[in-house]
Image 1 (cartoon, rainbow, N blue to C red):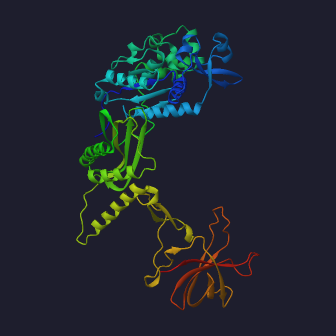
Image 2 (cartoon, rainbow, N blue to C red; image 1 turned 30 degrees about the vertical axis):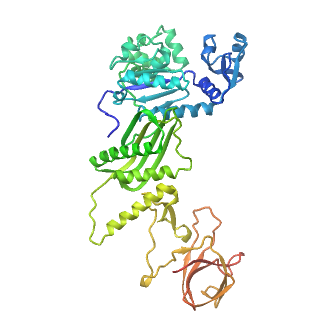
Length: 521
């Protein structure tokens, strides 16, 4: 089924993690079995010429220490401090993992660094018993993981963000943003220090003060961007979030009251999800080409496994078998930890699936069997391990073809060369790369070989065709700057070779060399 009803009024959830910097360090200490310190914890980083606080735990904040305060001032106020250096990369990674975790509540999740996440929860709150149930579930789970949170729900993303960061959080009824957020300070606009100072000097200290003023004078003095943000906070206009992951075409998910960890239970759940998903695909005349199985662990970790198909797929049995093979082929086996409390199966990319009419010669069935084999091998060994050749737009033999995953639907950039006279291939199917050098004896300098030596064996030539001259690709930066003359030759035993002369006799100072580029079957 489609995950969202786009006709319903939009509802957004803003998650603010005010202590994420210090919460990460406390979690690490607990995981490592280290005893938590008794003194306030602060995280510092150099900003300009001073060392300043970028994080402070609840104990430090109760004593007046806030992010932005100079470390020297903090030390003067509270001499006994636990100090840690800021690791911006680790904090960003943690926020991304939490955004992955929030995917259990909605497929539309956006990250707001350094400490915020916004979800579009339109049409999904009923799965948790309503918006209040969703908020309670999220708060309880994050609290169990050691995070301090403040959560707000509103009709616009900006209103939810403002209420979470500058209010007390909570749920705003549909259409009540102007009333519920009227008491917030003008800092909730997050319009910059200069604009905020100007508003306060003008006597405008709250959102209610701004809402009572005409918009044109405000825009003329403080800019159109400020009034646009104000309209979003008041719920007058909406700016949809930009999700960090594309919205799946089709989704099926299953939640478990008791987390599951046995592989038999996981496979059974995937079987049920495959059946539900394929029913939705069949109703819409679609087939999936890219599937994703997401496993949500009870401790917050999310594992995603992608499955590609070379053809539109909507058979539940085939999909289940491919998923099982994909799980068995993982380099790092699926670790359930304390168990998975939700599994989601999604279609990330699909295609129209028309009815197939088999011919009497059975070719359609044989072609389908080949595609099924490719899907199974790709699931077992990985999409990049099963490849096929496509024509490349180049006249150099070694660049005239390239390998791509067999299940890819990428279009070739060139066309295959036509067959030569009498159905004989103009070029061999097997090429040596790099081409080995050979010793050649020719009757005339620029003529075909009469004898050549390869791998310490001499071959006497009885027939020769050519030359086919191929010039270097001058538009590419390469050391290959000399023309090649190719010859198709046959020896006394009927073996056929493809050789070329690199360069011309009497032209330039570099020696002329001969190479064996391929052999004909």
